[in-house]
Length: 66
Image (cartoon, rainbow, N blue to C red; front, side, top):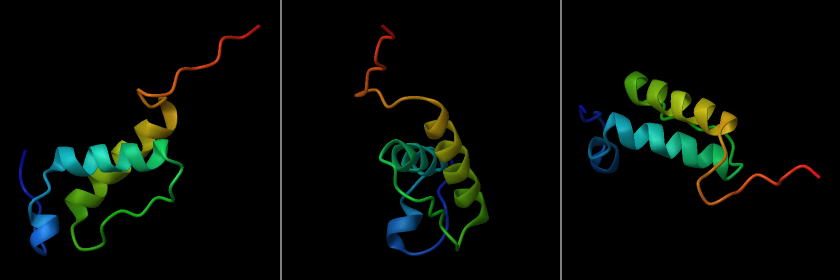
């Protein structure tokens, strides 16, 4: 995937990295904070965050209904 533009930290992150960061932030219950400098990275972050809100993190097991 392509690298994003910006400072050194951001430029080393791929679209997949941003997607995964958004998903993990949603799983952790953190507020949504997409990068402001890069529209493509922000879009990937938003996609990941949205998916993270829908699916459970791999370390969390849904409780069985009794």
